[in-house]
Image 1 (cartoon, rainbow, N blue to C red):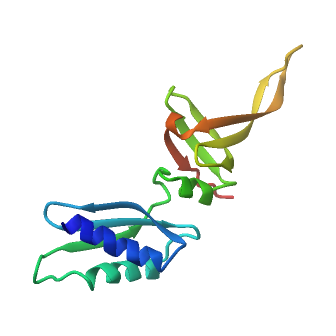
Image 2 (image 1 turned 60 degrees about the vertical axis):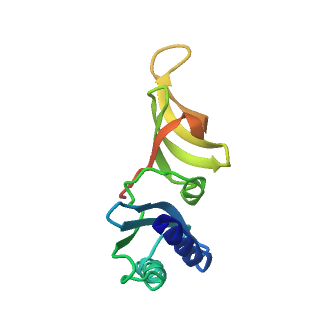
Length: 155
């Protein structure tokens, strides 16, 4: 009952802020409510406060005692939704695949079924000695991605 009511309140708050989207919502047995958000342009403290108030002001503490935490998805958290992949188009990702491979590349395309990563690699020349830089491209269906994280690069 509590989960449904909170989910409804979160959805109403997000309907008023279309650039935000829900990553996770949990209501523990002790009525500890945790809401994790992300946004197409990021999530501000004001966004978290607004969503928190939208939930808190519509639940009666006399009826049920609860704790509430509203936060943004951290930069080090794995991507979990198509919308997060779309938001990070053009950024460098580190992706672990179901076959145990780890790929680091630029996210160049995203659709509802798969992503495209591109990167440069040094490989032995086909003829002769030495190495040559080659452009690599891989299309990965979501079902083959175990974990994908944005690589934070400091220049």
